[in-house]
Length: 165
Picture 1 (cartoon, rainbow, N blue to C red):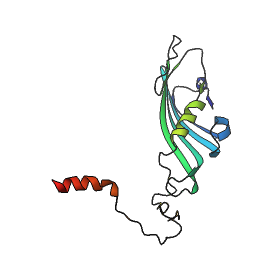
Picture 2 (cartoon, rainbow, N blue to C red; picture 1 turned 90 degrees about the vertical axis):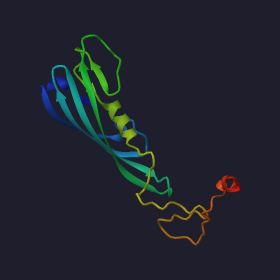
Picture 3 (cartoon, helix red, strand yellow; picture 1 turned 60 degrees about the horizontal axis):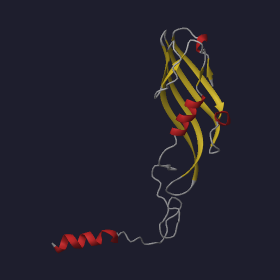
Picture 4 (cartoon, rainbow, N blue to C red; picture 1 turned 180 degrees about the vertical axis):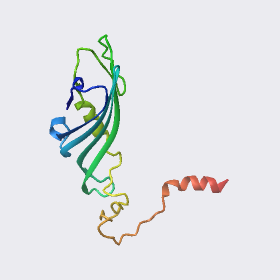
């Protein structure tokens, strides 16, 4: 995904991309297209782009081990500063453009932020009940007859210390 910023006048411009996940190099858990909506604010000294990215991924629930599809979204902002000397020290969400350049390649940034949209805890739904720790039954689908002993013996030695004093 390339933005040729020299084609745009100063001001705010809306740009959209709809690219297959394969073009970005995302792994096989992603499918379909990645939708990228950009709001580019171009001025004489800099370009600031607000990105909204959306992708669909095939995930496995951390609680019940069920497979599900999720729409992943992320928002981020990048600043591109025009500099005369050839600085290549890219900072966090700040990049430098030389006068020789006329395009911005956003593929790597979109890739990074789509990957960051994957949740740390993947849940098929917010109220997922998970698996029975005794028999392994998916508690979202049916209730099992196992009796769970909620007593945690790991704290018993500390309780004895407390009550002995």
